[in-house]
Length: 330
Length: 270
Image 1: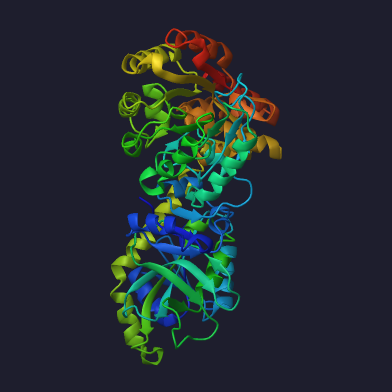
Image 2 (image 1 turned 60 degrees about the horizontal axis):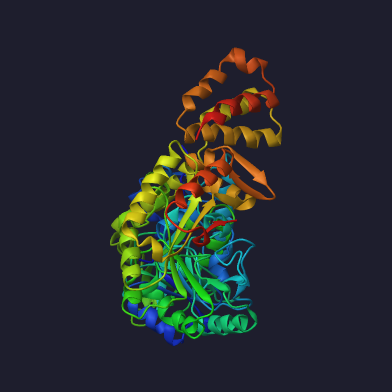
């Protein structure tokens, strides 16, 4: 599962670290002072490391809860505000379009284990946030994919149970839902699953569970009473894109109860230009990254008619869900 | 022959079994350098300083600046580990400064552990770690020349609390290495494979080399042409590059025109 586990001195004796280490007894352990001395080093190759990532158990200091960019999520248009927190950096999946490849020097997973500090900061943020605010947990990672090791849900859900007027979005491509199915659902904790059309998923979403498995997980969560959401991101134009999405929408909405879908979104493939350049260097042979791009305000996107495609997809999607459940990710 | 991997070995005694293992021949006496199939071995002498000097010397020989992997192999002491047990360092501490470095854990070996590089032979083994005299300096120097995933240090335990270092003999060293021959072979091969994967991912196209030779390109145009050639490969249409590589065409192109001509067919791709 992990090639090694690095353990920061500051968290070495914490109960959470001991519990995590018990779950991975075979993995070699390496003591470190501060996670940056492994994670932020120069001359690392993200692509090589991705073959056998290590786990880094660390303490997160500084600001732990931050505002999301304007228009990021489903709080847009409401009185609520958007915030994100990253208890983990990097993702167990290997999606070729993912910005994390360009954001971090290392493909190792950093798990910040001082969850209580995150919760305190979430509580402090909630104290000044308008009702309906949303806290996103899957911003720099996949929140569920490491659940058996991280026990993220077990730790963070009680905090949101105390604050039903605010939302937690758990963004994921994972089918690690056992913990969620074993507990009472929370109306303000949204499990948001990302989907791309089958052919694109096979092409670019390496190590990600199949669409069928993800959909099955989502159906089970919905049947158990959890609010589920659909994230059709990133939209990438290709030959027959509309028919690919038509097929995907038909499949997804034939299995989920569409009246009980919390929200659905579309978002285009966009990356900060510096991240994009780094990813191109890592994967120069990747056709997706060889396509014509356009640069707008420091963000790179594909050059081909994304806007009209998104509009067509919106029309298709709105045949399945109510307009108030839809948003476009900026 | 292109060197893929450099072996940095402190003592001639440690080098001897490796020279035999990799069928190497001596190509330099001072410093002592041996060459085998895609491998070089340098006998550095004892201590961090000489390990660094050896790395830098071999790196300077790499005039084409190709990517190379580096491995330091040698004997080490340990408080508790049995003699002959291998240990691939996953953390190397310079005991005199307290600094630590972390070789990437990408090689398939279970025997990994912490290694302390000391300035004088450690005969008391105060901590349950391995002790050597070169690895930290070696790692610092080698990672200045290549990616850190390609720098590793393998130690074979030669002494411990029960078997002191003064009982190490030339025959014993030979025996320690011989019992680890298969492991050394496989780690060297693994490191060469990692290097190969790193080179593959750079996608150096032969067409770019030819364009750079035959058309005057500014620094910016070089970057543009290199990427444009890579994009042809990404789309699987690299054969179309040959249309531009005829002597008649190349003779008429300047850098700007070459970039424009290369870009046109890519506009249609998705």
